[in-house]
Amino acid sequence: ATLDGRGGVLLPGFVDLHTHVREPGREDTETIATGSAAAARGGYTAIFAMANTAPVADNAALTDAVWRIGREVGLCDVHPVGAVTVGLEGKQLAEMGMMADGAAKVKLFSDDGKCVHDPVLMKRALEYSRGLGVLISQHSEDPRLTVGAVAHDGPTAARLGLAGWPRAAEESIVARDALLARDAGARVHVAHASCEGTVELIRFARSQGIDITAEVTPHHLLLDDSRLETYDGVNRVNPPLREERDKLALRAALAEGVIDCVATDHAPHASQEKCCEFSQAKPGMLGLETALSVIALTMVRPGLLDWRGVARVMSERPAQIVGLDDQGRPIEVGEPGTLTIVDPDAEWTVVPDELASKSRNTPYAAMTLPGRVLGTVLRGTVTHR
Ligand code: NCD
Ligand code: ZN
Ligand code: ZN
Image 1 (cartoon, rainbow, N blue to C red):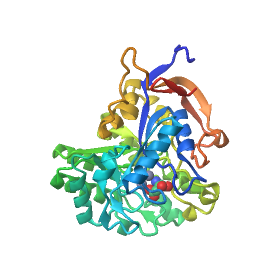
Image 2 (cartoon, rainbow, N blue to C red):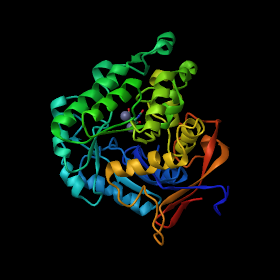
Image 3 (tube, rainbow, N blue to C red):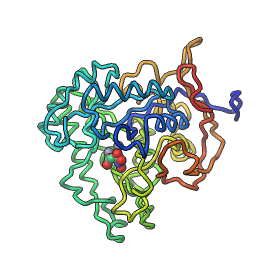
Image 4 (tube, protein in one colour):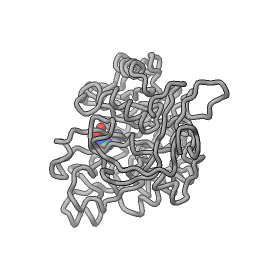
Protein backbone atom coordinates (compact mmCIF):
# COMPACT_ATOMS: atom_id res chain seq x y z
CA ALA A 1 0.00 0.00 0.00
CA THR A 2 1.09 3.57 -0.56
CA LEU A 3 0.08 6.98 0.71
CA ASP A 4 -2.06 7.53 -2.37
CA GLY A 5 -4.48 5.20 -0.64
CA ARG A 6 -4.03 1.98 -2.63
CA GLY A 7 -4.38 -0.93 -0.22
CA GLY A 8 -4.20 1.33 2.80
CA VAL A 9 -6.64 1.40 5.70
CA LEU A 10 -7.87 4.79 6.88
CA LEU A 11 -8.61 5.01 10.61
CA PRO A 12 -9.47 7.81 13.03
CA GLY A 13 -6.32 9.00 14.87
CA PHE A 14 -5.41 6.70 17.76
CA VAL A 15 -6.04 7.83 21.34
CA ASP A 16 -3.79 6.45 24.11
CA LEU A 17 -5.27 6.74 27.61
CA HIS A 18 -2.01 5.64 29.28
CA THR A 19 1.36 7.12 28.30
CA HIS A 20 4.32 7.97 30.53
CA VAL A 21 6.26 10.96 29.24
CA ARG A 22 8.92 11.80 31.79
CA GLU A 23 8.61 15.57 31.74
CA PRO A 24 9.12 17.06 34.23
CA GLY A 25 11.78 15.09 36.09
CA ARG A 26 13.32 12.48 33.81
CA GLU A 27 13.79 14.28 30.51
CA ASP A 28 16.83 12.08 29.89
CA THR A 29 14.41 9.19 29.18
CA GLU A 30 11.48 10.98 27.43
CA THR A 31 10.23 14.50 26.93
CA ILE A 32 6.85 15.75 25.79
CA ALA A 33 8.52 16.40 22.40
CA THR A 34 10.08 12.93 21.96
CA GLY A 35 7.01 11.21 23.40
CA SER A 36 4.82 13.15 20.95
CA ALA A 37 7.08 12.14 18.05
CA ALA A 38 6.86 8.48 19.12
CA ALA A 39 3.09 8.86 19.37
CA ALA A 40 2.80 10.35 15.85
CA ARG A 41 4.90 7.51 14.41
CA GLY A 42 2.62 5.03 16.12
CA GLY A 43 -0.48 6.63 14.57
CA TYR A 44 -1.58 8.43 17.74
CA THR A 45 -3.12 11.90 17.63
CA ALA A 46 -3.89 12.14 21.36
CA ILE A 47 -2.10 10.73 24.39
CA PHE A 48 -2.87 10.97 28.10
CA ALA A 49 0.31 11.74 30.03
CA MET A 50 0.40 9.93 33.37
CA ALA A 51 0.78 11.89 36.57
CA ASN A 52 3.82 10.10 38.05
CA THR A 53 6.31 12.74 36.99
CA ALA A 54 8.70 14.55 39.35
CA PRO A 55 7.07 16.67 40.69
CA VAL A 56 3.78 14.77 40.49
CA ALA A 57 1.09 16.38 38.30
CA ASP A 58 -1.25 17.14 41.21
CA ASN A 59 -2.11 20.80 40.51
CA ALA A 60 -3.52 22.93 37.70
CA ALA A 61 -0.27 24.88 37.15
CA LEU A 62 1.53 21.68 36.27
CA THR A 63 -1.25 20.03 34.25
CA ASP A 64 -1.70 23.25 32.27
CA ALA A 65 2.07 23.40 31.60
CA VAL A 66 2.05 19.85 30.19
CA TRP A 67 -0.90 20.68 27.93
CA ARG A 68 0.73 23.92 26.72
CA ILE A 69 4.09 22.28 25.92
CA GLY A 70 2.25 19.55 24.01
CA ARG A 71 0.45 22.21 21.98
CA GLU A 72 3.74 23.97 21.20
CA VAL A 73 5.29 20.69 20.01
CA GLY A 74 2.18 20.14 17.90
CA LEU A 75 2.68 16.47 17.02
CA CYS A 76 -0.27 15.16 19.04
CA ASP A 77 -2.58 16.40 21.78
CA VAL A 78 -0.96 15.75 25.16
CA HIS A 79 -3.72 15.55 27.74
CA PRO A 80 -2.38 15.52 31.28
CA VAL A 81 -3.76 13.01 33.77
CA GLY A 82 -4.18 14.64 37.17
CA ALA A 83 -3.09 12.92 40.38
CA VAL A 84 -5.97 12.54 42.84
CA THR A 85 -3.79 13.09 45.90
CA VAL A 86 -1.22 15.71 46.84
CA GLY A 87 2.36 15.14 47.90
CA LEU A 88 4.29 11.92 48.11
CA GLU A 89 2.38 10.70 51.13
CA GLY A 90 -0.84 10.82 49.15
CA LYS A 91 -3.01 11.41 52.22
CA GLN A 92 -4.83 14.52 51.00
CA LEU A 93 -7.06 14.96 47.97
CA ALA A 94 -5.75 17.18 45.16
CA GLU A 95 -7.80 20.06 43.71
CA MET A 96 -9.30 17.97 40.94
CA GLY A 97 -11.85 20.68 40.18
CA MET A 98 -9.09 23.23 39.50
CA MET A 99 -7.36 20.84 37.13
CA ALA A 100 -10.65 20.11 35.34
CA ASP A 101 -11.33 23.85 35.00
CA GLY A 102 -7.82 24.76 33.77
CA ALA A 103 -6.60 25.18 30.20
CA ALA A 104 -5.82 21.46 30.03
CA LYS A 105 -9.41 20.56 31.01
CA VAL A 106 -8.21 17.46 32.84
CA LYS A 107 -10.63 14.60 32.21
CA LEU A 108 -8.78 11.67 33.68
CA PHE A 109 -7.45 11.34 37.22
CA SER A 110 -5.24 8.69 38.73
CA ASP A 111 -3.42 7.58 41.80
CA ASP A 112 -0.38 6.90 39.64
CA GLY A 113 2.93 7.19 41.40
CA LYS A 114 1.33 7.02 44.81
CA CYS A 115 -1.34 4.36 44.75
CA VAL A 116 -4.36 5.16 46.91
CA HIS A 117 -4.04 2.33 49.40
CA ASP A 118 -6.66 3.72 51.73
CA PRO A 119 -10.17 2.69 50.61
CA VAL A 120 -11.74 5.62 52.46
CA LEU A 121 -9.55 8.07 50.54
CA MET A 122 -10.32 6.23 47.29
CA LYS A 123 -14.04 6.55 47.99
CA ARG A 124 -13.68 10.29 48.66
CA ALA A 125 -11.65 10.67 45.44
CA LEU A 126 -14.39 8.86 43.50
CA GLU A 127 -17.03 11.15 45.01
CA TYR A 128 -14.97 14.22 44.14
CA SER A 129 -14.47 13.01 40.54
CA ARG A 130 -18.23 12.81 39.88
CA GLY A 131 -19.11 15.19 37.08
CA LEU A 132 -15.42 16.03 36.48
CA GLY A 133 -14.25 12.94 34.67
CA VAL A 134 -13.05 9.40 35.15
CA LEU A 135 -10.95 8.05 37.97
CA ILE A 136 -8.39 5.43 37.07
CA SER A 137 -7.93 2.44 39.27
CA GLN A 138 -4.35 2.93 38.23
CA HIS A 139 -2.16 0.42 39.87
CA SER A 140 -4.96 -2.01 40.37
CA GLU A 141 -3.05 -3.95 42.94
CA ASP A 142 -2.98 -4.48 46.66
CA PRO A 143 0.53 -3.39 47.77
CA ARG A 144 0.40 -5.73 50.76
CA LEU A 145 0.30 -8.64 48.32
CA THR A 146 3.13 -7.36 46.12
CA VAL A 147 5.91 -6.55 48.58
CA GLY A 148 9.16 -7.31 46.76
CA ALA A 149 7.28 -8.89 43.84
CA VAL A 150 8.92 -8.66 40.42
CA ALA A 151 7.17 -11.29 38.28
CA HIS A 152 3.84 -13.08 37.93
CA ASP A 153 3.32 -15.50 40.80
CA GLY A 154 3.27 -18.73 38.81
CA PRO A 155 5.39 -21.78 37.95
CA THR A 156 7.91 -19.74 35.93
CA ALA A 157 8.71 -17.31 38.75
CA ALA A 158 8.90 -20.22 41.20
CA ARG A 159 11.38 -22.08 38.99
CA LEU A 160 13.51 -18.99 38.40
CA GLY A 161 13.46 -17.93 42.05
CA LEU A 162 11.71 -14.61 41.39
CA ALA A 163 9.38 -13.10 44.00
CA GLY A 164 5.80 -13.60 42.82
CA TRP A 165 3.02 -11.07 42.23
CA PRO A 166 -0.35 -12.83 42.62
CA ARG A 167 -3.40 -12.26 40.44
CA ALA A 168 -5.40 -11.56 43.60
CA ALA A 169 -3.41 -8.33 44.11
CA GLU A 170 -4.99 -6.91 40.95
CA GLU A 171 -8.37 -8.65 41.17
CA SER A 172 -9.08 -7.58 44.73
CA ILE A 173 -8.46 -3.89 43.98
CA VAL A 174 -10.52 -3.99 40.78
CA ALA A 175 -13.38 -5.48 42.85
CA ARG A 176 -12.85 -2.89 45.60
CA ASP A 177 -12.81 0.08 43.24
CA ALA A 178 -15.83 -1.18 41.27
CA LEU A 179 -17.85 -1.41 44.51
CA LEU A 180 -16.62 1.98 45.73
CA ALA A 181 -17.56 3.51 42.36
CA ARG A 182 -21.03 1.99 42.71
CA ASP A 183 -21.49 3.51 46.17
CA ALA A 184 -20.02 6.86 45.09
CA GLY A 185 -22.04 6.99 41.87
CA ALA A 186 -18.77 7.61 40.03
CA ARG A 187 -17.00 6.32 36.92
CA VAL A 188 -13.95 4.13 37.24
CA HIS A 189 -11.49 3.00 34.56
CA VAL A 190 -9.30 -0.05 35.10
CA ALA A 191 -5.74 0.51 33.90
CA HIS A 192 -3.72 -2.30 32.32
CA ALA A 193 -5.95 -5.31 33.08
CA SER A 194 -3.63 -8.32 33.12
CA CYS A 195 -5.59 -11.29 34.54
CA GLU A 196 -8.34 -13.62 33.40
CA GLY A 197 -10.15 -13.00 36.72
CA THR A 198 -10.08 -9.23 36.17
CA VAL A 199 -12.09 -9.73 32.99
CA GLU A 200 -14.76 -11.68 34.89
CA LEU A 201 -14.90 -9.01 37.62
CA ILE A 202 -15.42 -6.26 35.03
CA ARG A 203 -18.14 -8.31 33.36
CA PHE A 204 -19.86 -8.81 36.73
CA ALA A 205 -19.53 -5.13 37.75
CA ARG A 206 -21.10 -4.05 34.47
CA SER A 207 -23.96 -6.50 34.93
CA GLN A 208 -24.64 -4.68 38.21
CA GLY A 209 -24.91 -1.35 36.40
CA ILE A 210 -21.55 -0.06 37.66
CA ASP A 211 -19.99 2.57 35.37
CA ILE A 212 -16.70 0.77 34.73
CA THR A 213 -14.40 0.71 31.69
CA ALA A 214 -11.07 -1.01 31.14
CA GLU A 215 -7.96 -1.05 29.01
CA VAL A 216 -5.38 -3.70 28.11
CA THR A 217 -1.81 -3.13 26.94
CA PRO A 218 -0.37 -4.57 23.71
CA HIS A 219 2.33 -6.38 25.72
CA HIS A 220 -0.19 -8.23 27.88
CA LEU A 221 -1.89 -9.40 24.66
CA LEU A 222 1.30 -10.70 23.05
CA LEU A 223 3.78 -11.67 25.77
CA ASP A 224 3.63 -13.99 28.75
CA ASP A 225 5.91 -15.10 31.56
CA SER A 226 7.70 -17.60 29.33
CA ARG A 227 9.75 -14.50 28.36
CA LEU A 228 11.38 -14.48 31.80
CA GLU A 229 13.73 -17.41 31.15
CA THR A 230 16.47 -15.06 29.94
CA TYR A 231 16.31 -12.83 33.07
CA ASP A 232 16.37 -9.88 30.63
CA GLY A 233 15.24 -6.77 32.52
CA VAL A 234 13.36 -5.53 29.43
CA ASN A 235 10.58 -7.98 30.34
CA ARG A 236 9.99 -6.53 33.78
CA VAL A 237 6.75 -4.54 33.86
CA ASN A 238 3.90 -3.65 36.21
CA PRO A 239 1.56 -5.49 36.23
CA PRO A 240 3.76 -8.45 35.29
CA LEU A 241 3.49 -10.58 32.13
CA ARG A 242 1.04 -13.33 33.13
CA GLU A 243 0.31 -16.78 31.72
CA GLU A 244 -0.96 -18.04 28.38
CA ARG A 245 -4.54 -18.35 29.68
CA ASP A 246 -4.59 -14.73 30.87
CA LYS A 247 -3.33 -13.60 27.47
CA LEU A 248 -6.05 -15.52 25.64
CA ALA A 249 -8.75 -14.26 28.03
CA LEU A 250 -7.61 -10.65 27.50
CA ARG A 251 -7.71 -11.06 23.71
CA ALA A 252 -11.22 -12.53 23.86
CA ALA A 253 -12.38 -9.75 26.24
CA LEU A 254 -11.08 -7.04 23.91
CA ALA A 255 -12.80 -8.67 20.91
CA GLU A 256 -16.05 -8.96 22.87
CA GLY A 257 -15.94 -5.42 24.28
CA VAL A 258 -15.68 -6.43 27.96
CA ILE A 259 -12.33 -4.65 27.80
CA ASP A 260 -13.03 -1.38 26.01
CA CYS A 261 -9.73 -0.33 24.57
CA VAL A 262 -6.00 -0.69 24.06
CA ALA A 263 -3.66 1.60 26.04
CA THR A 264 0.10 1.39 25.71
CA ASP A 265 1.40 2.10 29.26
CA HIS A 266 4.42 3.40 27.27
CA ALA A 267 7.04 3.55 30.05
CA PRO A 268 10.47 4.77 28.90
CA HIS A 269 13.52 3.96 31.02
CA ALA A 270 17.25 4.61 30.59
CA SER A 271 19.34 1.67 29.34
CA GLN A 272 21.29 1.43 32.59
CA GLU A 273 17.96 1.09 34.45
CA LYS A 274 16.94 -1.86 32.27
CA CYS A 275 20.16 -3.74 31.55
CA CYS A 276 20.79 -4.87 35.08
CA GLU A 277 19.67 -8.10 36.76
CA PHE A 278 15.92 -8.78 36.34
CA SER A 279 14.83 -7.92 39.89
CA GLN A 280 16.86 -4.69 39.83
CA ALA A 281 15.47 -3.45 36.50
CA LYS A 282 12.86 -0.67 36.57
CA PRO A 283 9.41 -1.89 35.52
CA GLY A 284 8.01 -0.64 32.22
CA MET A 285 8.17 -1.05 28.42
CA LEU A 286 7.93 1.23 25.41
CA GLY A 287 4.68 0.90 23.51
CA LEU A 288 3.64 3.83 21.32
CA GLU A 289 5.52 2.95 18.13
CA THR A 290 4.64 -0.75 18.13
CA ALA A 291 1.05 -0.80 19.44
CA LEU A 292 -0.73 -0.95 16.08
CA SER A 293 1.52 -3.76 14.87
CA VAL A 294 1.04 -5.80 18.04
CA ILE A 295 -2.74 -5.40 17.69
CA ALA A 296 -2.48 -6.47 14.04
CA LEU A 297 -0.54 -9.55 15.14
CA THR A 298 -2.62 -10.58 18.16
CA MET A 299 -6.12 -9.46 17.14
CA VAL A 300 -6.44 -8.88 13.38
CA ARG A 301 -4.41 -11.84 12.06
CA PRO A 302 -6.24 -14.42 14.23
CA GLY A 303 -9.59 -12.92 13.15
CA LEU A 304 -10.56 -11.56 16.57
CA LEU A 305 -10.95 -7.99 15.25
CA ASP A 306 -11.44 -6.54 11.79
CA TRP A 307 -10.14 -3.04 10.94
CA ARG A 308 -13.48 -1.56 11.99
CA GLY A 309 -12.84 -3.19 15.37
CA VAL A 310 -9.32 -1.74 15.47
CA ALA A 311 -10.83 1.74 15.03
CA ARG A 312 -13.13 0.97 17.97
CA VAL A 313 -10.43 -0.16 20.43
CA MET A 314 -7.65 2.25 19.36
CA SER A 315 -9.72 5.42 18.72
CA GLU A 316 -13.44 5.50 19.34
CA ARG A 317 -13.80 3.87 22.74
CA PRO A 318 -10.82 5.63 24.37
CA ALA A 319 -12.09 8.98 23.00
CA GLN A 320 -15.58 8.25 24.36
CA ILE A 321 -14.31 7.21 27.79
CA VAL A 322 -12.69 10.60 28.37
CA GLY A 323 -15.23 12.58 26.34
CA LEU A 324 -12.97 13.85 23.54
CA ASP A 325 -15.35 15.32 21.00
CA ASP A 326 -12.80 16.14 18.28
CA GLN A 327 -11.04 12.77 18.02
CA GLY A 328 -11.81 9.13 17.63
CA ARG A 329 -14.51 9.47 14.97
CA PRO A 330 -14.72 9.52 11.18
CA ILE A 331 -14.04 12.97 9.71
CA GLU A 332 -16.76 15.02 8.08
CA VAL A 333 -16.40 16.15 4.47
CA GLY A 334 -14.37 19.36 4.35
CA GLU A 335 -13.12 19.06 7.94
CA PRO A 336 -9.33 19.05 8.60
CA GLY A 337 -8.66 15.40 9.28
CA THR A 338 -7.33 13.73 12.43
CA LEU A 339 -6.48 10.32 11.11
CA THR A 340 -4.08 7.48 10.60
CA ILE A 341 -3.28 5.52 7.45
CA VAL A 342 -2.13 1.95 7.94
CA ASP A 343 -0.67 -0.56 5.51
CA PRO A 344 -2.13 -3.81 6.84
CA ASP A 345 0.13 -6.02 4.72
CA ALA A 346 3.52 -4.41 5.30
CA GLU A 347 5.87 -6.09 7.76
CA TRP A 348 8.73 -4.33 9.51
CA THR A 349 11.49 -5.27 11.89
CA VAL A 350 11.78 -3.37 15.16
CA VAL A 351 15.20 -1.73 15.48
CA PRO A 352 15.46 0.07 18.85
CA ASP A 353 17.89 2.71 17.54
CA GLU A 354 15.37 3.72 14.87
CA LEU A 355 12.63 4.58 17.38
CA ALA A 356 11.63 8.21 17.91
CA SER A 357 11.38 7.63 21.64
CA LYS A 358 14.38 8.77 23.69
CA SER A 359 14.51 5.35 25.34
CA ARG A 360 15.27 1.91 23.93
CA ASN A 361 13.39 -0.47 26.22
CA THR A 362 11.19 -2.18 23.65
CA PRO A 363 10.50 -5.87 24.25
CA TYR A 364 10.08 -6.36 20.48
CA ALA A 365 13.67 -5.66 19.36
CA ALA A 366 14.52 -7.64 16.19
CA MET A 367 10.95 -8.96 15.91
CA THR A 368 9.21 -8.67 12.54
CA LEU A 369 5.67 -7.35 13.02
CA PRO A 370 2.75 -6.89 10.62
CA GLY A 371 0.96 -3.58 9.97
CA ARG A 372 2.75 -0.33 9.37
CA VAL A 373 1.59 3.22 10.10
CA LEU A 374 2.13 5.05 6.79
CA GLY A 375 0.96 8.45 7.92
CA THR A 376 -0.64 10.39 10.75
CA VAL A 377 -2.60 13.63 10.41
CA LEU A 378 -3.61 15.95 13.27
CA ARG A 379 -6.31 18.48 12.30
CA GLY A 380 -5.02 18.62 8.75
CA THR A 381 -1.31 18.73 9.63
CA VAL A 382 0.82 15.71 8.69
CA THR A 383 2.63 14.67 11.89
CA HIS A 384 4.24 11.52 10.51
CA ARG A 385 4.81 10.00 7.08
C1 NCD B 1 5.37 2.58 35.33
C2 NCD B 1 6.38 3.66 35.00
O1 NCD B 1 7.48 3.32 34.56
O2 NCD B 1 6.07 4.84 35.19
N1 NCD B 1 5.92 1.30 35.02
C3 NCD B 1 5.23 0.19 34.63
O3 NCD B 1 5.81 -0.89 34.64
N2 NCD B 1 3.97 0.24 34.26
C4 NCD B 1 5.05 2.72 36.78
C5 NCD B 1 4.40 1.54 37.39
O4 NCD B 1 3.23 1.28 37.10
O5 NCD B 1 5.04 0.88 38.20
ZN1 ZN C 1 0.62 1.01 36.50
ZN1 ZN D 1 1.56 3.20 33.75
